[in-house]
Length: 79
Image (spheres, rainbow, N blue to C red):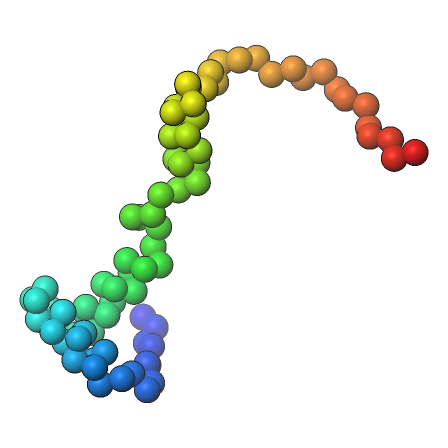
């Protein structure tokens, strides 16, 4: 498992981490791991597809059963 060293961490930040860890009943190291995990993993984040689906529903819904026109198109002309 990788190891990360954080240099020049201000004393007040280290103190706040220790207090926060104690409030959650774990070590400072475990608290830092939890903070990092929450910050980088998408579990709690709203995904773009979910957001777009919600916008579509608010706008009256989207009919995904509509048949797409598969007729080939002509290439664009730049002349």
